[in-house]
Amino acid sequence: MGESRKEMNRRSLLQDALRSAGLLGMGGAFGFLIGRAQAQQYCWQIDPYKCIACGNCATYCVLEESAVKCVNTFEMCGYCKLCTAFFDPAPQALNTGAENQLCPTGAIIRTFLEDPYYEYKIDESLCIGCGKCVVGCKAFGNGSLYLQVRHDRCLNCNECAIAVACPSEAFIRTPVENPYRLKGKNHSA
Amino acid sequence: MIFSVSAMLILTLLSGLPCFAQDIERFPPPDFDSGYVFPQIQKPLPRAEIFQYLDVVVLLAALSLASYLVYRRRSRQGIFLLTIFSLIYFGFIREGCICSIGAIQNVTLALFDESYSIPLTAAVFFFLPLIFTLFFGRVFCAGVCPLGAMQDLVLIKPISVPPWLQHALRMLAYLYLGAAVLFAATGSAFIICEYDPFVAFFRLSGNMNVVILGVSLLVIGLFVGRPYCLYLCPYSVILRLLSKISQWRVTIGPIEDNCIQCRLCEDSCPFGAITPPTPKEMPAPGGTDRLRLVLLIALAPILITLGGWSASWAGDAFSRMNFTVRLAERIALEDAGQVEGVIDASKSFREKGLSKENLFEESFRVREQFALGGWILGGFIGFVFACKLIALSLFSERSEYEADRSECVACGRCFSTCPQSAKREKKIDAASSA
Image 1: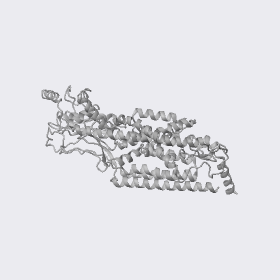
Image 2 (image 1 turned 30 degrees about the vertical axis):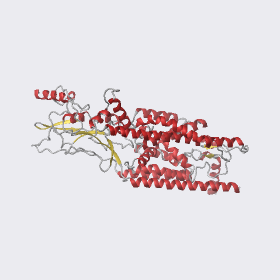
Image 3 (image 1 turned 60 degrees about the horizontal axis):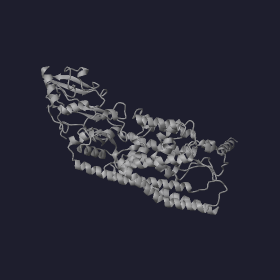
Image 4 (image 1 turned 90 degrees about the horizontal axis):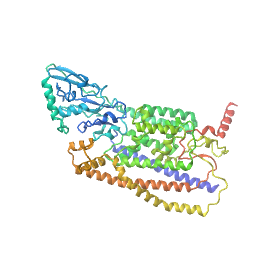
């Protein structure tokens, strides 16, 4: 009996020592990692200057309807009558008929302001983030249309499925204090 | 009309030009006469930070409650209710992110990549369950992990898996952990998140392949207890190890040393975690056993080297998970004329006008990391294999049925089956009513 108790004591002592070492190690690692981090949370965002509007955002998001939508920086927009983001490259006629629009869901609302200017607004409930208009705007317009992760929809997955599929490494982790990468008037940033 | 058609014609002619690199202000924004004001861009905010701290508080509370239910109340019902709560909160409300299993990768990436700063919640979700495990065993698995909860709830008709198969399948978890750490450390991918089988259920949408994986695991889980936890979960590898030295361990009956060897508890455990006592009459340790142990210990370095060598071959294949390596390979193939056309990634790279030398250099560096990582991963698997063999050949004496420290997920199914504990409760009831 005495022998086995001694054995038990030795075993429990060893376990205690290992446990303390484990606790210390984990505490140390935790402190090290948190001390080095700026203790901030991240969210995903698209760098519009890297994005090539390939269309992956529309299909790779884990949500049925992508969290990525198109936004328009109005200060940069040319308010063109002939908007290459709005019209199909070979339109039947230059009106808002569905067959003339580039957007597959008709999510761009074209409103007449004053001759010859038109305002182009994105209806986010319709936008699927395919980026077709972004390509059109970048190619022939001012590049005021671009894709952004909308944080009311984004689930902030630990690893963003679109980021994995992004061909231009445009998806970046951004501090939550500043969750958007909007283009500005000074757009050569 | 004529104006517009000719304009379209010019645009069509222009469309071959690569204009992607920079925005050009082709049409200066107009000065409006009508007093038009620019609309504001809506910027919906992400989930407030305070809610992430709430997650931490809920995690701490759930872990404490699980420990209380397992050790003080010894209540399967309580654990079951906590399981449902965790499934709803961490699963369906928080939609599965962030979870402790995935946090392995955040911690790994933070250790290897100084530019990545780990979110506090990810660090807490990784370390807190480990600390609880050091004291209470795998209470995290019992009632807090939403993945475990999902499988625990579908377990209807458990069948027993033969021990040899259990031991073999369990090696998968070590491989999964090793691969996940390798991919996270090289900044290539978070494979635990990518192949999380149940997160698609929590979000009610997801990649079809992963949904199929999840459904198959659930179907298997109808008969085999917690297949993901037992055979795949990389976090369980760490929990298993730590629960071996936990301060307290789950006991089947409330007091030890009064087992009547009825085997009811053994039948109640769907995870094969209850080990029977060793036979009273044991043959004296003979020379063959010792020889076997010495042989196995001598075999360990060979297994480690063999594992490392074979995985170092796989390292190059693994490195294709890395974006830079894939891109560099594609660019090289395109330049050599071995593939036709461009893909989005190579097109984007060329339009950005980045230096190819830098890309190839970076790709080479990553591949070297993978070559080394392959050796380490293979060596690790060899080491685990050797440890497993040694552990299987070691013999420890048990006088009664007990829950194996590392296998037991503290689900509490065996608590009520022990007739000794029922007898004790009756006595207590009688004493309190008298």
